[in-house]
Image (cartoon, rainbow, N blue to C red; front, side, top):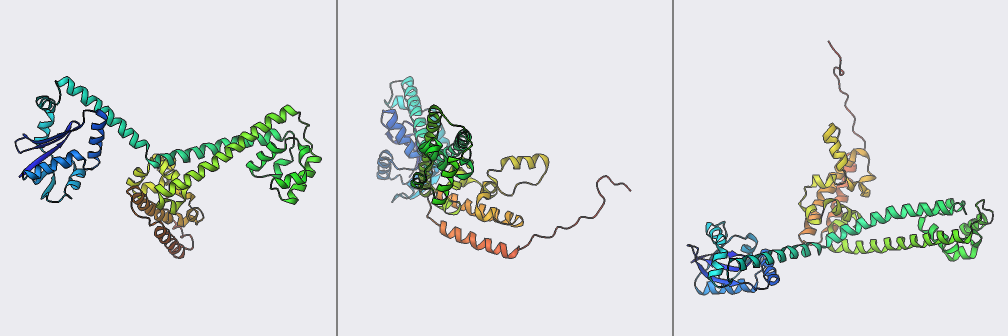
Amino acid sequence: MKSTLVITTVGIFALNSKGSIIERKFFSKDPKKAADRYHRLRKGEIVSELSQLLKELQKNNYNELVIEDRILASEISKIKDVNCMEFNESSVIQKFREKLDVTTVKLGRFSDRQDFQDFISRVTLAIAEEAVTSETQKKDLHAIQAIRTLDDLDKTLNLLSGRVREWYGLHFPELEKLVDKHETYARLVSDFGDRESYKIDKLESEGIPEQKAKLISEKAENSIGYSANPSDLETLQSLSKNTIQLFRLRKTTEEFLEELMKKIAPNLTAILGPLMSARLISIGGSLERLAMMPSSTIQVLGAEKALFRSLKTGSRPPKHGIIFQHQALHTAPKWQRGKIARLLASKLSIAARIDSFGGEFIGDQLVKYIEKRILEIQKKYPSAPKVKKRYGRSRGSRT
């Protein structure tokens, strides 16, 4: 015999062809527990209430079932001795839902319709909270926040490092050209302070090469900068120490992101590297959204301004967006970039889908294929194509 299953926030109901209840299993009166059951069913999980209901139906020879949820339908169809499982939008279900408040009151589950409405409101709120909690637990959202934090830290570090150099340059201007790395410069300012402290042995203990240490020491002795008072140097050293802390924070954040990307998007990471992969996910909105995008969209992600400008003015559309940072693409000749960009985007699209839907790791295979195809492109198009001259009347000419 045939039965129709109806999943509600109150419980699960089995109906016959006339819409009458054959079997029922109510969820807990605790709104959070009821919301949890409903949420798990919507994800395709066979909870205890549904399992018990199916056993009761099988005992009564109801082996042919109709259910409106496609995901749950495919899971129930795997159960032994269930002969048929089909998806169907039934008018029986719609009519039953419309009278659910009256039905549950008659069954004694609720004292009146107001009691029913209050319970539904609490369950709906709990379902919304569960959805928000589930969303925030997605690891790709943490990757997005981490890469944006790195971008913010880079901006802040460039600003503070420039300020340290400019300020300390009043006291020891020669150091500016002798030390390139911002972090090393800030560390020297923090550790030494007054230029008179720049001794060769101390500089070498800071990891400065011997020849460079001698040069810095000599420049410090003959510097044309002003003699700073202790209060000036103390404030400047404090700024340098905080800048160094930000450099350390950036390093730990980058290490965290690298490990996270290997777990959540190993295939994307194999092609682009952890930072660029995280940035691509950030621009796309999430790993799932990225997986849903066609390769043509992935190809120009990050070049939205250029794309809209081309749509507005009729100029040539961009060939690539953020993926231009890939070494094989940005080092390629201009006439090869379009083909390489399409190649990369197509494989990134595959990688994103595999990562999003929990597939196996094939990143190494994708990388090998990309490298092989790039070599073929380089051999096939070794030089720029000749531009064909256009013949005809120039704009504005008249006969």
